[in-house]
Image 1 (tube, helix red, strand yellow):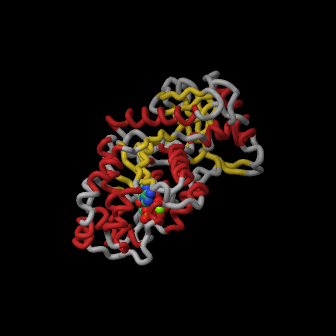
Image 2 (cartoon, rainbow, N blue to C red):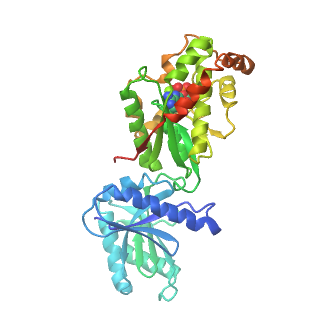
Image 3 (tube, rainbow, N blue to C red):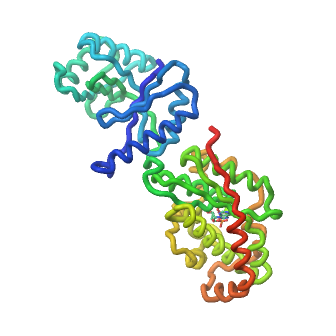
Length: 398
Ligand code: ATP
Ligand code: MG
């Protein structure tokens, strides 16, 4: 049984009132974007406060529709449905029985409940009557079924609107809020496992992403850079197109290496990363930074290290993975499809100049004193880094 119409369910909590249309319009825009990437021609429309996707011809694969829509934040569920004209009660009964027989042809015995909604008040039966009468028709015409009003295997929805909607299945959506409803943030995207997941989680709250990658050629290769572009594209499958800003960080790293104690390298380097990311964020209209940090994961992510790193930021820094175990992060990365790319073994600029025994409890005063060694050199290096940023537009290839 191939469906041509899909009802889009979205969470309504918190979006009642004046902002509701903004949410719905953003959702429809993201749905259209996702559907453009698959074969077929679709209409996305809003009627009576519901969003529908309608296939306009036969040239599509139903599974592709689910796959595409499962990348659209804001969707709680996708219900494949029959939408039919009102041609009288008898005809409706026939359609519903055929639907049940076909949709559940493999089930021998199951329980069901009819849930009716009469949005068009001139329909001859009210909701209770539709439930009761249709329930009887189904019991009568399909063998092996019984009614269970509390915990049915099949919840059959019949909605009487201008047309009539019949549906009973829900394919789970990703949840969250439509991208574009919550401003823009700058993701610090490395080639690791964590930062793509962090980006995914913030985009899931409706936030558009820009990203920044600190590249250190020749210590980090073109392949490492390509890996980050690929990751940005994979995140873009959910977040929409991502502008990836690639910063040449080599000279700043070398200066730090030359002038600062080696056990403080990572912390000082991370402070410069945050500063540059914040400047880029300001230039591109971002309201916050996003990182993949998680408390205690490595030396630079102890509470003390993060406090010292954070000290350079005036913008909010969101760390959605802060309380996650690595295994939980790995699971999400597998689910969203970034894991395979993340584990490709290319060098990372953080690991190149890393000290054998980095400080785990840095002291801000001491770090600042070490940083003062950079005065006179760092300013022009910083400026050059800002002036030579390469920006790559990363769109999903799915
Ligand atoms: P990830 O798996 O995201 O690389 P990680 O466990 O390797 O994280 P770190 O290397 O300490 O941890 O990096 C912490 C965070 O800093 C990353 O999640 C990312 O947001 C940011 N970051 C690290 N290196 C870079 C880089 N080269 N370019 C951009 N951001 C980076
Ligand atoms: Mg890393």
